[in-house]
View 1 (tube, rainbow, N blue to C red):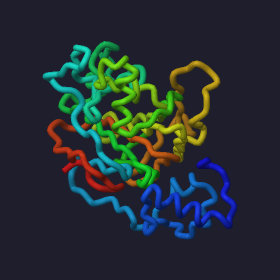
View 2 (cartoon, rainbow, N blue to C red):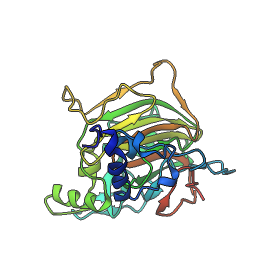
View 3 (tube, one colour):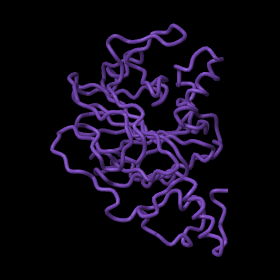
Amino acid sequence: MMSVDIPPRWRTPIVGSFSRLIAADESELKECDLEKYSTLNQFFSRELKPGARIFQKSSHDSQVWCPSDGEIIQFRPVGSSMGYTDGLGATKTEDFMTVKDCSFSLSEFLGPPLTVKENSTSVSSIQNRLCQNDRNCLYACAIYLSPSDCHRFYSPVDWKVNFVRHFSGSLLSVRPSILKFFSRTLSGGKSDDNISAVLSIQERCVMVGEWKHGFFAFTAVGASNVGSIDLNHFPQIRTNIRPKNDKLYEDHMPKNDSVDLKLNMGDEVGKFNLGSTIVLVFEAPRGLKLREVSQCKIGQHMIV
């Protein structure tokens, strides 16, 4: 339905009704003539007019900018020296991230070991495997995009992308309340604290690379049966399509395999065709003051 062509005479009333339904801010549209949107998908992934979002200046050496509009539902260092126990009695520490009182395994989410240290082992913590500097730690941030948000996303820092890992996965809703429901259902009603049963089976594209402080991963998570994720620099990746083989994931290199893809802060990375989630996992110096859970806009500071 979202990709069905709308006859020109019906575009303004249909797209206008859709705009009001999702509470879109039409004053931000680059293209204000609703008749120019031939499908609802085109409107949903609409471009914003110049100046609608500005990447704020910052002198902070470890600044990370909001890559999208949405709600920051989790932002904190990965793991805890104290650890905690889930509803099944299992102790979780550095390998888990919590989103709305639910947790998921970053190892499962990112896939098989992404090791940057030669002496790392498959059983070491994800921090030990990914952090290049012992004085740094991993931070993880999850941003939920609601239907009213702009669904284009941008590079939050200057970095280089080594490859993209595409998990075909499933297409469940990523609305926070729904995440808890599926987590509880898939655990047989025993717990709503293990969201690895949800986010770790979602279709997603994990862009893996490095920035000035070390490891950096940007993940676009598909949802709601229209998991179409368009990555500007990886047109070969086709999402929301049943895979031809049984592979859990496929790694895709930049167009020129011998050269990493360099993205500058503010470069457009891609777009979603329905509401979804972005998860950032990155290495940075310990002790950063992080932005609290809140609504965010493209280009705002995430380190305060």
